[in-house]
Image (cartoon, rainbow, N blue to C red; front, top):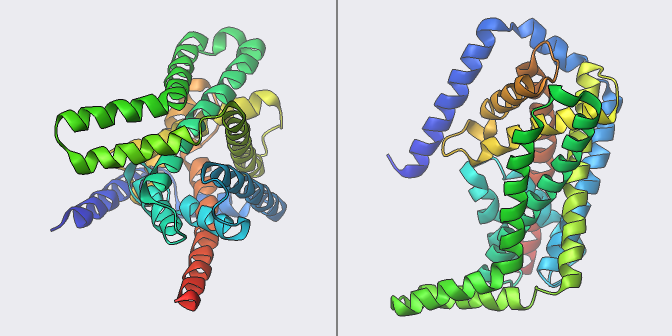
Length: 322
C-alpha cells in the first residue's frame, strides 16, 4: 500500500472514529434540524461575502506574482487553491494545485512556491493581529473570564515568528543556498538561489504593506463570512464580543489542518478542534461540535462547487490552447 493510500485510510479512520463518537450522543433528527434552521438569507450572504474574500486573495497573489497572470485566470486559480486546502495535511495539496496551475501559465516553480509560502506567513501575521484585537475586546468586556495572559503570549509568538520570516525571507534563502553550496548540493542550491532572487524582487516596503493589508482583509472577510453562518445557525446576538469569541474558535479549528493526521477533508478534526476551543474560552453553545459541523459542511459544499467549477474552466481553456 503506497503512502497516499495509507494517508487516505488514516483520514477515513479518524473521520469515522470522531463521527461515531459524535453520533452516539447526537441523533440524525437533531442534525437535520440544525441544517434546516439556517436561514437561506444567511447562506446567500455568506456566499457573497466569501466571494469578496476570494477577490482579496486574488489581488494578493497577483502582487506576489508581479501581475504575470491576469485577473480572471488568477481568480480561477485562487478558487481551486482554496477548495484544495483540506485535501492533504498541512495544506500540502493546496500548494501542489497552486504551483501546478501557475506553472502552466509560465510561472517558475520557485516563484509559485515562494509566493504561496510567503502568503502563508502573511496569513499567520494577519491572524495574530486580528486575534490580538479580539483578545483586547474580550478582556475589556469579560475581564477575568478570559485567559488573557496565555492568549497574549501565544499571539505574540505567532506574530513575531511570522514577521521575522516576512522580513528575513531573502537573507534566510541566501543562507540556505550558501549552506547547500558548502555541502555540494548544486541542484538544491540553484533552487534557493531562485527563491532568493524572487524575494529580492518582492521586498519593497510598499509591496509588503499592500500584501499585509490584503492579508488582513482576507482573514477578516473569511471570519465575518463564517460568523454569518454561525449567527444564522445559533441565533446568537451580533456583537463584537460574540464575533471575538467565535474567531478564537475558528482559529483553533483552522490549526487542525496542520495535524499530521486529520479527518478526510478536515471532517471531524475541524469540528473537534472548534468544540475544544469553544469550551475553553466560554463560547456558550449547547452542542458546539454540531454547530461547527453545520458551518463546515456548508462552506465545504460551496468551496468545492466553486473550486471544481474553476478547475473545469481552467482545464477547458488549457485544452483549447493546446
